[in-house]
Image (cartoon, rainbow, N blue to C red; front, side):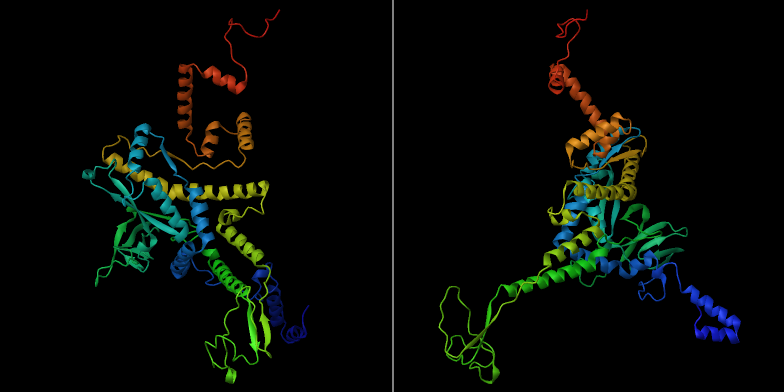
Length: 493
């Protein structure tokens, strides 16, 4: 309904009145959050993912590292949940193409010396790379070709580099390509090279007077691992970015609670009157108490009977406990764990509020998120590129005759939540044709071919030892008999 001003404007100028009416109708938006009356204004609205990273990436990385180093439940989320559940004791690599058996044996030997630093094997290197990706948001793995004289199974090694090695101060152009935060893109937007420092910029072991410089490294030699969240995103953000501020506030509250608990544990007494005859004159202020000075009259000994001068008045200072601390901390930890994507019980060890059903539901959701990272991030962005580089190096070195890069990855198996029910459910799915034994084995982290070969070998050995029938009897409860060997069942008439 038009107000008096709108009606007056419409009387003198109908067109202007209609424009005012239309403008007023536009204020009634379909989404309340889009109303101009909403005072919330997002920071850097419309900025690209790369612009956000350039502004905030480095400080978020530094704060995330501080949280992992100093906050127990953040460290537990990374070291006790994400890394063990995603990497476990290693993600198995199995060649499936030509010369599969030879390639698998060659990869197994190469995995022992794949790390250029020489401190761990291939699986340990993958663990370190994944942990760095979650903590820092991104990590670099450099492919290091080696000489035949190095006597490696395959002339290739891998080196994990913290993202600090990337010269993100370098932005501009190079031979017609565009450089954004140390990453060089060609005219089609494909990564052409990375600009890396010749030394970690945070290393304290620097030659005096020597200035570190960055140099260009071809993109074919670098694997850049991160979990992109937005289209066109070229850099990664730490998983802990959404909880940095909340974790800081929670830690501040915990520190304040510790200080308050210290006060609660102390009993103080204020004495007024003539205290000149008491022991322990003031440590600060006027020793005699004249002029309003403050005196320290000593400590109260437990179980002591102390005589006081006449005329003294005493006031006991006894802080009262403030309730609600545990409930508030639990609420904050629930929010933090949900934002990180890790079950609350995994980062706190607190199982008091869950039952079997609720724990299983949360665990299944957590498993899906872990599997998503495994198959949509680690496999295409890290594991497959490493395997393809391994095949190329092995082929060029004459270790294999065909550069067949067909490969399968077996993720670490999940422990049973309820072994009996889960095995029965898997068996029922196989019997109903809804799944296969091989698929169920892969879901549990086993290689089906390896299991079948071991099973065939075991059955063959049981037959050779003559114990197969005994094992079947122990499992089924009846001993199979050959025709005419004295079957216990009576013959049919």
